[in-house]
Image (cartoon, rainbow, N blue to C red):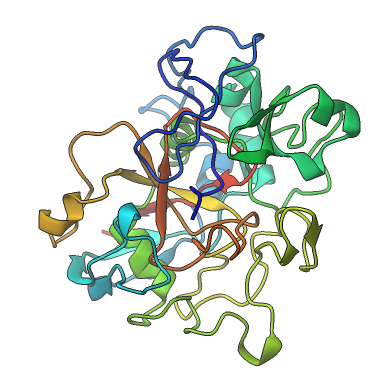
Amino acid sequence: MPACCAPQNPSSGQNPSPGEESAGPALLTLALPAARPPAVPASPAVPPSPAAPPSPAALRAARGLLDLPGGRFLMGTDDPAGFPADGEGPVREVQVGAFRIAPATVTNAEFASFVKETGHTTDAERFGFSFVFGGFLSEALRAGSRTVAGTPWWHAVAGADWRHPEGPGSDFSARQNHPVVHVSWNDAQAYCAWSGTRLPTEAEWEYAARGGLARRRYPWGDELAPGGREMLNIWQGVFPTSNTGRHRGTAPVRSYRPNAFGLYNTVGNVWEWCADLFSPDFHRTGPRTDPAGPPTGTARVMRGGSHMCHDSYCNRYRVAARSSNTPDSSIGNIGFRVASAARG
């Protein structure tokens, strides 16, 4: 089965050959458009001075997090529908401490408040392009942008970024409550620094996404559409030509029913960045109490799948599924939700 739907922005100014694959399950690389400037150090956000109180907007961004008690849970899967090469298994008992996590991913409106206060420039804006699904593009943009070998539905579009999700001429004005996309792991970290939050660890993410259900494929059980009910935003119909699902692209962040812990869209809609570096096997012998991923690596963990997932090539919209990408990569189907330590 082909690698999943998340092309990679090569890090550190590297320029691999078209179609070259990196070690992670989602790292489909692309020769960069000629107009892309050389890579430069990531531009950090400009957070408020530590001596100054957080702004009202930053305080709002950190409100409403769910208090989860933590505890022991069964992480991972040995499901035959999974991808062993991704390191989904084995199932193991993991302990996580109490923490807080957002019920939904960060929205366009929330990210706009952050940018307005800090002047943050995203990686996509610095590089001058990001990856967009070809079906969302005008004929001219499709013809004028390069595709990814092996996943030709992804186009590297000059001018695509969080403000312009489908490239020049598009905007998010009608999608204020949709997840922000075209944000890299670096950008997510900058937002967290501003809002006084952090990204969840991979173990925290899975504990929260499961909603207390053990060994289930989805946050609601094992059946994808119980009683014929649509439970998540993934591609339905014939990929990549005909989507018969309720949404075309992203859905509002509080779509569908939340899981038993109150989290929305933990599978489908957008991939979610986690704090951890990615490894397909570190967890086999790594810590079982508050694991935080391997100490070294080049890619960061993503969880949850996206609206681009389809069973014909990628069923990573399961709770235990995992993927990764380089921290400067930005794509039209990756967002993030925030977390924080438990209340003192």
